[in-house]
Amino acid sequence: MTETQAWDTYSKQKPERRHTNAAGESTWFNWTQYADHGPGAELLGVDPGASVLDLGCGKGGNLAHITALGARAVGVDVSLAQLKAAEARWSDTGMVLHHTEATRFLAESGEHFDAVFSVFGAAWFTDPAVLLPAIRQRLRPGGVLAFSHRPPIEGCYGCQASYINRSEDEDPLVVKRWDYEPERWEALLTEHGFTVAAARVLPAPPGPRKIGTLLVRAHA
Image (cartoon, rainbow, N blue to C red; front, side, top):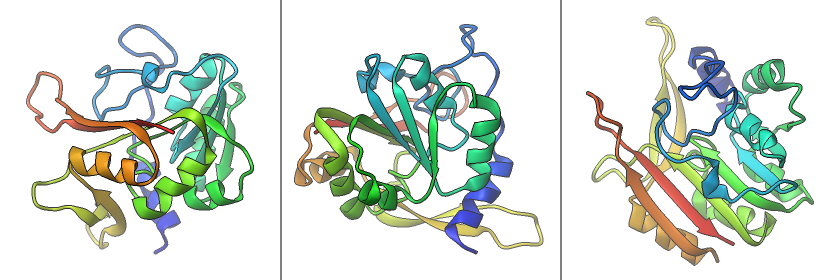
């Protein structure tokens, strides 16, 4: 199975975004795996007219909110199923979608961006030694890179196997992900020319689940 097939399978399992959030808004930005939790798009510092790139945009919910802020929103994903779902729901927003791999898009695109983000997306599932310098080349001076994903399991750092389950009669699909502690992410970003790098684990909201969200942010 190719990586594309793995993410197409994941697309079928991922529930659709609600039509409104707890505040009654039709678009919103969510960095975490929990509904109505954590900071929003203010972390990106997006102004009207800015150009913003989502690496691993999935079904486009966060990207739709970027368009509502008056920015030019560009999304990249390897899963055609994810992109079709984004087009079906958000076709009237003006977002621009590309069916390709993140590092390929960054290498081949001539566009520069004011902000690049990834929510449980390509920043987690791409070798940072390859991805970070590619992002750095596409960010305008002072631009923001921000991404989020689950914190690493203690002692399990670097390239790890991530499993996407299928039916009981089929083996799970496997994709690679890169897990690091906050301090290591800060060091990696600094090594690749980013400044003001900061990473932290945002605690889970009150309730039975205890796994927080690793949130990383830096400037070009």
